[in-house]
Image (tube, rainbow, N blue to C red; front, side):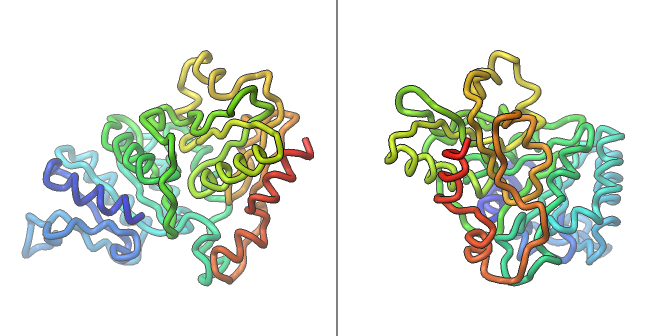
Length: 303
């Protein structure tokens, strides 16, 4: 979310018709365009909008702005509140509107706010919607790519799913993020399998790859920030990323695992979260629910 905020503020002067705001969460979602004023009856030149705590109305207004033309609207709130946005996201997709939804605090990494604010099923819900591109980036470069994907869209909404916690910059994250999925860290020598993940869990996959390498097991790490974009790539490209002969596969994502089975196949396993979270620091919850290097290693070796 911090990098996303920096990107918005870099774009705001280069894209003067960028126009948006949040449901009373601009400081938390990092979506205020600094020095750009707030739209009101007194200031029609303001580029930020105070929508208030009304997520559904916010998204409906963004749809109207997009239909009017001339402006590029974005809206923001916490990811768990995607439930309130869903009817309007559906209309965005039905009407082929390039509205950008910036949804932060994307997992149990939220921490002490507890299960009411920890998304579980929301990724699955949004990925199931036709004509919606969901992007869950793993680091700063993937976040920049995610914003580029959103701003280049002409006929479909884009949902950016961002973390609350800081993430490490990953070696190998690159322009192939535009393809929705790519080999972030290839095996050294002959690969015996694949670890795949999105968002904050990609760095976990990289650490598990290192641990497996120490034990004489080589795997590749695939970052899959966007199912929709990856499935649009050629069969040849998808085969390069997920070779059919590598049947030992583990998918890692801090949310419901429904949807990952299309990539892990019958022989693979998913490390997901198919129950509600709890109230504790994020790092405690990740360990409690199995998002650890050792559990990823053990899961792969069990295949």
